[in-house]
Length: 430
Ligand code: PMP
Image 1 (cartoon, protein in one colour):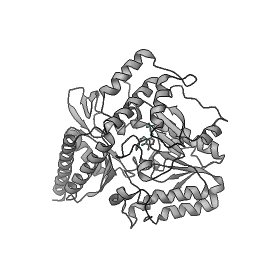
Image 2 (cartoon, rainbow, N blue to C red):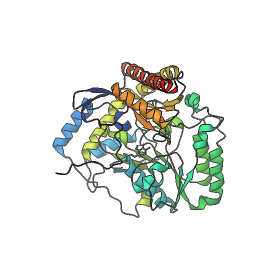
Image 3 (tube, rainbow, N blue to C red):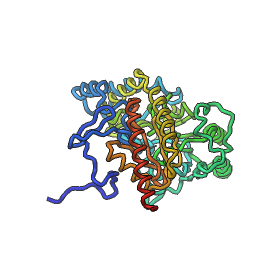
Image 4 (spheres, rainbow, N blue to C red):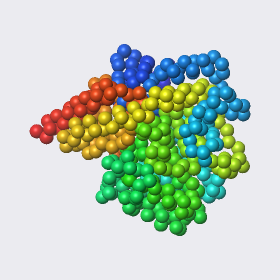
């Protein structure tokens, strides 16, 4: 029989793929019983630890009751979840549509934007990533992920990479003050956007943004950036999609969503990944007006709002709130950042560490160095991720249950992996 294989582009990170056999809290076990510290939580999707008993008990009970219920009917778990979630959302976001992934949420949100505005043009940002379906790829600024043929001509990418070179690169130190600040970012890129909109706003359906550019390399906004963006949205009366697929559900620490932390006002909110602790679910929340406008078209998702995923989402959210994991995310995140910054600054190829809560990026000089460090950490039983336009940013995004002991272990392994690279670099120079 011919050997079945995944598509060539499927990237396993390591020479031989890690065959996962089981996982518990922040630990993953391979088929040989080797135990890894999970610093990446299945690409930022496990919020409350692998196989969380509180979530899984409820999930197992639901499996015995009903596994599938398309939205032409309604299940109790779906209604219960919406009631729990609604308490955490602003009042204007009270209409909801369930899908199965982040990409589908983005697809639906883009359709909603265009249908609501009855205009074609969507503004996205150059370093953004929004998923793998055609529409989600079409609003993704990172070219490696864009569709090859049939690009969506009605997407305008506002460059924001100069942000990284901006002389006011103060975002890292100013997170606490982000809300309601007097604006310090002169927002050159947003001034360009303002000019663009002066000429094109009559065509513009809205803007899509990730509060923190995740796949793009954990890039945070500068102080005041979102306040300016908000002003622009109000000036031209254009709605905003906030993509919280990666940043939502406590990943950014201290608040459930990044839009709350950064003072953004979404008209459409996209959620997925950590929403249901690894069970597939995507969700789009929007206003009455947007929902009404969507009523003119048919939309359906067979598995959207799956009752088992809804139970997982309900108990995940309860667990995050009851166990005060937002605070843990904030505190462990701060500890990781400050310790890593201290210990990594000595390496000449280290560039910067940035992030908030448990979404942390370590930028190094080159993609090759990042890849070598990723592999070196793997050999020392630590799983982390990689991102950035040049693939030179190591991503640390563990479960919100990550403890101080785990953080210390992660730091030690990363520092040792950096040291190993430094030794190789200096040997190469000899
Ligand atoms: N938006 C963002 C910000 C993401 O990080 C991702 C996934 N990395 C997606 C959308 C797509 O989500 P999914 O893989 O669930 O389709």
